[in-house]
Image (cartoon, rainbow, N blue to C red; front, top):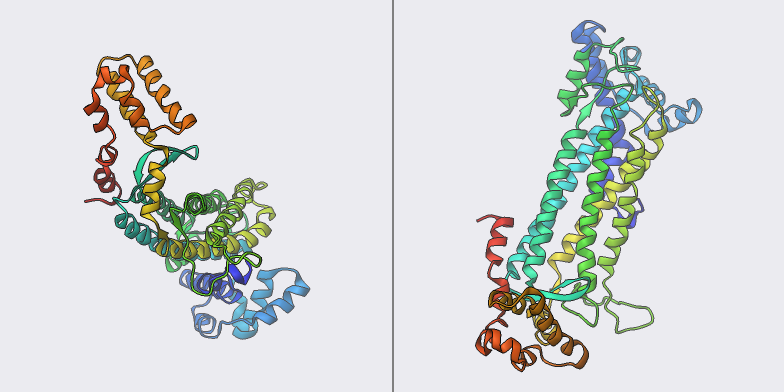
Length: 431
């Protein structure tokens, strides 16, 4: 991921220093377990623990010759440890180190992303309660439908992001597995106790059945969870982009002092944050396919998954981490225009109350077919001739005969549509 979209906290997880540090800890812990079992001498452990280290430049130089990253790493470690290094990596295969390390890194990344989601959820909740009763137009197919509140829109986003948090937490738990089981997962040359010991110390669970690698359905679940989060993020971004359109202008991104919207048009205030989030979501979602394709490996393992994971694991977690922080700022600083919301709601001259009139007519004894015909006939006059919906209904003898003028006027009450807002908020946020 390019520096423009990278936060240092997430980047550190994927830097070589962190990766090799985890490798060294896995190898050291495995050696400790092997010493407890009597496979290697206990007296070599202090040297491995205290002198164990690595040199990244040296690893790169060795790998350039041997074409194997784990061998290069072990060679570098041996140069620090000395003769006792011959007892490191006893009975292990490279994937025991690589896969267990990747699990640790993905857990570390998930923890960062969970913290990001907590920030987003807190911001959405705060703005939702701020605008719980801010009336605005609900739209379906982009067309005015019936009144809602801006707070309800935000409550919907909150509930979805809360589900995403649950998904990510589950993915974190399922990826938090390690495998120290040897060349094909049979523990032929290493005792299962070593795996249990290392995993416990590293905060992982032993993989119940590994091959040479941890099964990639776990990783697919993880990256698909990130993709769903990205899609939910885009849903919010799309809403902001629509609401910021000049013809709508019910909400807009904060435009800071000194900010410029266009190199050509000085008047422009563009929804650049939301558009950026839409682009980020496209990139993050695209990585689901290789993650899913990684599940089907040949027999006990091939390395077709390896190269793609080296890309997508850092890139997707870095991209989503950056995006969630950007989303949080967007929500916290979103400028809302309640007067424009009300103005837009009234733009269609009462058409948004058509369903209430329809229901009133059916309850007064008019068939649904006739009721729909009466309401639509008067609604079309608003669309086509710019008439006022309530006025047309009051001038329609059939409608007045069925409902009476007072009942018609009562049906144009906004509070009718908003009477259950508190109920919905309690469902989403609790009492």
